[in-house]
Image 1 (cartoon, one colour):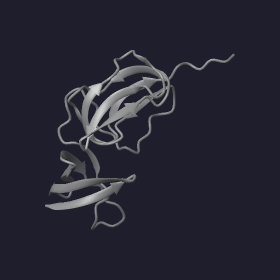
Image 2: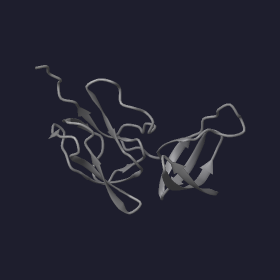
Image 3: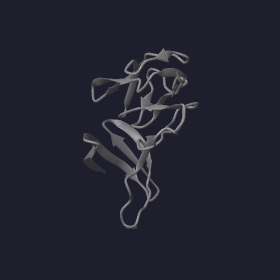
Image 4: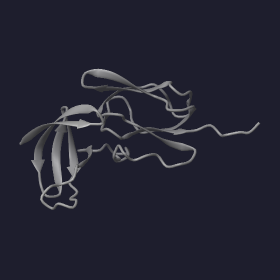
Length: 152
């Protein structure tokens, strides 16, 4: 249908709109197909930027969350995919204690390997992905608990 090159947060993505209805679009971003809900804003003739999610989520996997969503304040939060890609390897298990900067997940995107690192010290509470899974930008990869704070 239509092809675009979109720049999001300084990165360029090749996007093809495969099918579009007033409510949804099927888009292909760098070779990965997504279903996107169209949300109208002030101008009724143009849809807002679609919020993409995988076209067919796997059973037992959480639904995608927009990349702008932040984990809730508190002692834990989700580590999210920084870009769409394929999970090559999960380097940790549930219950693993990690330090800031430790490798957590290896993603393949645009024929390059990208290592997602621990944003802080903590414990891996729950894994949401496994090797071979496809993820969209902003999808949760795992949940991490921060260590308890102590005072001297």
